[in-house]
Length: 422
Image 1 (cartoon, rainbow, N blue to C red):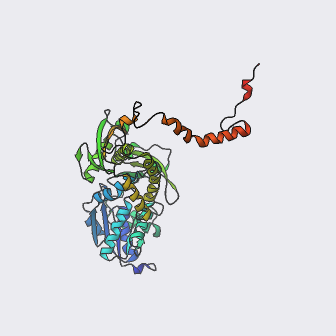
Image 2: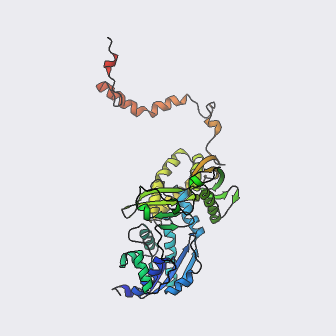
C-alpha cells in the first residue's frame, strides 16, 4: 500500500457496474484497504439497474446507493442551462457537462452521510469529466480526498482491465469491447472513439442509438406544440406534463424524425481537440422553440446581451464550474429575462429539421398594427430621416474629413480619368 493511502478508511465510488468501475472497486480495496460504498445515479441512461446491487456486493462493495435523479437533473441543471440559451462552441447542448456536477453533488452527500474520507470516479486523465467531478467536490467539501484510479494505476487498456478482473475474481458480465465510448442520460447520448477518431469519416449509421437517420425518417412532417412558462417547458400538444414525462415525449418525437444529431470537433478543457457525435432529440426541439419564443417576448437589447452571456454560461458549464458565483450571478440575470417568456411555439419536424412555424404569447412584444407600413400613430416614417442622419453621423464626419483633406474617403476613391471628355 502506497504512502498516504492508509489514511483512507472509507470511499464512495461513482459506480455503473461496467467493466471499468467494477475493476476500480476491487482495485480500491486492494490498494487502499478501505471500505468501498458504491453510488449509481439514475439519469435516464437506460442501463440495466436490476442486479446492480448484487454485483456490487459480489465485487466487495459494502453497500450500493441507487438514486433516481432524473427530475432533479432536468429541473435544476438542464432547464437553467436551456433558459440561458447556452450552447458550447456553436453546437453542443452540454448533455454530459451538466450531468457531472449533479452526480458529484450526490457523491459528496453520501460521503458526508457515511463519514467517508474520499470519493472515487472512473474518469480518464485525458477528458473533461475528471475536472467536473473534482472541482464540484472541491466546491462542496474540499476536505474530501478524490481518487482517480486511471491517473494512478498501471492498467493501460480494456484488455488490462479484463485481465485484472479475471485475476481477482471480479464478476464482469461482458468482456466485449464497444468500439465507442458513450455517455447517455435522459437529455442525450454522446459517442466518441473508434472510427470517430478520424474526423473525416462519416459516422456509421449503426453507431446511432436514439434517433433514426433523416433519410429513414417519415416522409410526412409532424407538428408539435411546446408551451413554456417563464422560459421552462411545461406542456406538449396542450398536455401538461411533469419534467421527465415531457422530455420522454419530446425525445420520442425528435428521435422519430432524426432530429438532434450533431457531429463536431470540440476543444476540451484539458487542451486537446476531440471529435464527438451527439444525439439530442428532445433538447434540440426545446432549444429552438425557446429561441423562437424569446424572439417575440424579449426586447432587442436584452436578446443581444443575453446572447453574449450565453457563451460564457456554456463555457462555465462545460468546464465544470457549475458551483460557482459567476454561474449563480448569470442565473439571476437569466431569471429576470425569462419572466415574460411565456407562450406556445409550434414546430414542424421533418427529416432531421426543427422548423419553427408558429409562436404566440400573452406577453408578446410583436404587434402587427405597429409593424404595418400604414400605421402612423406609433411610428411616423418621417422621423426616420432624422434618425438616419444621427445614426450615420460618425461615418459621415470621417468621410468629410477625408475628402476635405485628400479628395477621397476611405471607402470611395474615385478614378476621375473615367470622366474625362474626348
